[in-house]
Length: 204
Image (cartoon, rainbow, N blue to C red):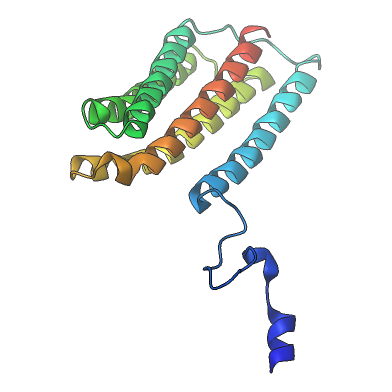
């Protein structure tokens, strides 16, 4: 039996056990942070692939550049404020303080919702002026890139809503510190992704 047990062990799931110490996970970081790291890596690859496809596709003769909606600048500012508020909430939580924590964290999500609403307004305005998804490849890529970014934001807002409920319910800063940190990292990532998308759209 000992031989079978030895052969079926999974040493990659733990670190060495010495003198009665409890086994530890293979990663020193919390599982949630590791999972977020993997997700951000995958998301980076996806956005990179679409970005490369955009650049390649625009070189073909049927490409008609889409005029940059001026409201994109306002929406970019809203997302930047959202990211700043999340960072503020993270700093407060790391200091173990309660004052302004709820305002900063919930405010970050609210500004993200305003960003999404602003993007929806742009979509409606474009369609009202005849810039439909299937009108030309440039339009299709605009809706695709902005829609993909919104989808990732909505996923983050789902996690944000759960953490916000915990804050409203009276959770202490140390109880939600990890959730706030992960939301902050995720929002910084999405802000960087959006700035890249915005730069590509603005220059083409």
